[in-house]
Length: 408
Image (cartoon, one colour):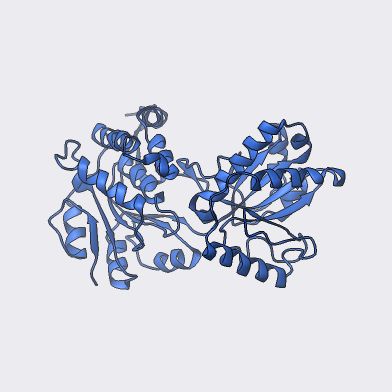
């Protein structure tokens, strides 16, 4: 029943003391100047951190919270004078182990919404986490922004008593993780007035128009391949928005163009594949072959670059089952974009596309008859965070909205 506190400017040392002390904070109005300045300074410090370009996920994080972006967001949410936005209170964030930096997005949105925050991160450390903690310490030395006592970052082994205590004293709970962990923590009681945002397992894939591949110059084809690889490589293909499959749309006579694309991807100077990654891919591919998720007659296992395996659309199993990531992509072939609709799963989150007009995409969306798909983005933008995530506006979900009648 012990927590390891990674960042805190409170005097508290036990988990009960942490909750008691941080709860002495008051809620702020959304987009309070103090929170905005803290987040802006964090963004600036992170962009200027030595060697930051070696961490593209941190660069993306810093750019997302840059000054101009926050100003635009505040204008979008504060334009209605008959609505007051303020924090809900204590926000309890549970971060996943597979994406080191995701908790910062929900934490900063919560801070900007006016909440004070308790964040549990994975016990698995990383260079990214160390950098973030270092910057938080630097920004909090003088506490010019009055934000230092509004958040605590901790880690602990899975513990029912701690998680239950944090939950029942929270006003909002934000859960990132696998289905089992999200379901387990969801079982811990919240206040009757508290709310919850859940981000469980999701899956994502790409769609490529083969007829548009044919029109590309070699340099443009390479740019597309680089963008696709960017979506695959970061986070080891473990993020919910990382594509694990690609649908090639076109006539049978155009299918040779798919190989020109996949060959271009693997002709990139891809970083060395680790033995453990190869083993995970091999085990995953073997399992998929046994379950007839892939067509082993048409698939050759590639251990040198990205592994592309041809999938079968028949049966009740798909790329969503037993896919361990690590740079493996399942290919499917269809003649028409709208045929994909029947294969959409309610767990699908992001579709990254190339070669389709907005009109074609809108028609395609009409073919989806379940809750699947929350984002459609260009290839290369799969991992770009947005404040509307899994179909939820996080600023709305993390704020208390007070309406004022025009009759007053």
